[in-house]
Length: 330
Image: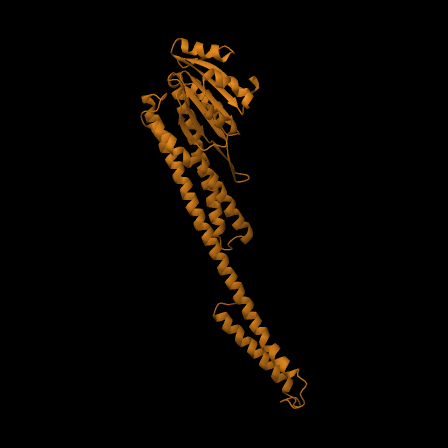
């Protein structure tokens, strides 16, 4: 069990103190004065490893099942003895242009917080360190932890949104460059980027309702004084959601513009091919006529017949070339 425990500590009056290794004793010690709470951090526990935590803290089996299986949408569930909050931290690899989402679950109850992390990108270590450096915030108990974790995750959304915006500007410049970019690579790049935005929206969008509930009244285990702070998180989340929607709309417009450019280039290519085919067809037709094996054909016995036919071919081709040039086909 110790292998999945990332950190475990009792906090009294905003100060960290190391508690007993036994969860029951640690929780009892945290509740003894009424001013402390226990914070346990776990990383990808198995069912057997999580059984002890479940029994000691009285966690609801449905929430435990969600925490173990992962692949959950952001949500907030209220149970008799605890809250269950699911967050999806997001990372963006600018080298590969890929959005990666992790999962972070919080069980918040009377004098305890249990965090369960799946994947990478969860800012728990930084949050715990920052809270431990600010006892005035940490003394507010489990609510402070839930707020700080939510705030860090949502701030991460804004960081990723800024990175996506930078790469999207580069993609837009590539599409609207004079050359139009390479058709195959550009289209593939747009679709790839759109998939990353969809992944980003899956993390951001569903979190709006849980944060709105935390910012309101009537949620157990959430102190009233924390509501303004959760409203601030909700504001940041709204900004992230607006970024995601704007990216999605802009990508759709960029894709439509790119497909239009491709269609125009294809039409131009088709006109050029048609023009050259017409110029080749005229002399081919004339040569075909004079290549027939007829005994009586005009100009066959005259000296000027051959140069006259060549001149007619050249004049016809030159006339067609000038006409297509004026019409923009060449």
